Amino acid sequence: MRIALSQIVSGPRPERNLAVLREQAHRAAAADARLIVFPEAAMACFGTPLGPLAEPLDGPWATEVRQIAKDTGLVVVAGMFTPARDGRVANTLLATGPGVETSYNKIHLYDAFGYAESDSVAPGSKVVTFDLQGLRIGLATCYDVRFPELFRAHADAGAHLSLLPASWGAGPGKREQWELLIRARALDATVWLAAVGQADPAATGTLEAMAADPTAPTGIGHSAVVGPDGTVRQRLGATPGLLVAEISSDEVTAVRRKVSVLANRRLGRNV
Image (cartoon, rainbow, N blue to C red; front, side):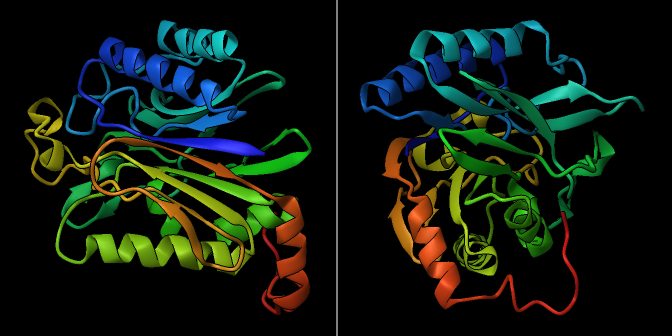
């Protein structure tokens, strides 16, 4: 299956970001992709007050994403913010398109490196997968990458591909951590890992996307597709770009025959 990773810079205005999503989805469809993945916070960048922007999954922003999916024939995965019961918001991935309609709320919140995502975001609790063209796909978000049990749960649920939209925080050593972690999670669970981050607003001069809060994670780029053996197959740099890659479930089967880390576990399974 052919997938597309769209590395963009989101600004604080959801309607402007939708225009970018629409243009990128049409490009992906022209490249014969069947799935396009946008970053975490595609709706609006971190550092923006999230409460006033949050919308339910049947609200106008998500409805427009569904229209983009319908117009292009793609399954679209995009990060947005939905209202939570306690007055905070949920950091939500919407997955929508032909035969697919589901969502995932980020489980592990970014309370690290001087930023407290949990101040405004409520955590999710459910592992989410969906099927597309015979391929089962798991959903994760950004800081989730530091927790291998989630990606093993995807594998236990039958997934051969995990999607990881992100808005990675910048700082010393953070790019190296990102690259190490995405490779490790693919190898831990012997899945394909499609990690798509926000492009670096500093590298692009997109000042609107650089939040007033200097600790807000606004992205560093370096999206990548990692094979089930932990090798990077394709990658982008810091600036915006569209990456198109082929995903093979047969390769997952072959790797799992050689590297039986899932079958050899002794500390239980997470499903």
